[in-house]
Image (cartoon, rainbow, N blue to C red):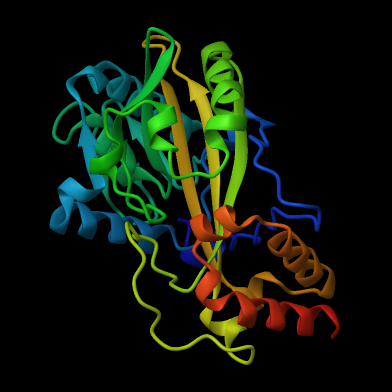
Length: 300
């Protein structure tokens, strides 16, 4: 039986190369077997999700009626994927899926909304997009790790409205994103990375909270965190809905930025950001301390 220590810890993603910051889709092809990312911390993550769904349900789960067919299709696809590609951890017998790690067992045919149940099975969050007249709307989500946005404010909205706060999205990304979503085939999976530097390691973060203590060049490495979202997109063959997954990794900065080159790259990318991007990414309060820490590590 698998144990916690048999699941590998994630290697921190470093989605910057020292080049100037550019708003791009940054999509890469993904093998179907790599759709879901499972690493150590799985049991703790699932327990955290259970608690959120019990105590703050309407903040972390919502689904419009039109999401019903896609939600059921997603759950079927996910259960089959886990039983096939993560067989040491999950086993399926008919309509029951069991976790050999946590001892949990789920009835896939009854009980929770299928989208909510999908979110209880793995570390990923799930969002469902449906097209209406060529415009993709968010019609449902199991979202236990939001990065300073609220599901209730985005549900039912088209992609352009969802991304209104993102600098240059309307000018540079809205058209390419809409065209990509319209052309995505069911047999093609893609992934991308989105990242932030935050002063709060909390995964469930619908809004920014005040910093616990001042960030200085001396403590920035331990009080700041690299937050990286591994995002995937795939189209469901029957319903035609697009499933957008978000797997969030939060790593203390001094653990994530382990080399002088990584520190130099991140500092260069941060310095290249425009003022609107800086405001959106919410690091102005500690920018000077962050850059001083990175510069020191780059010279070490």
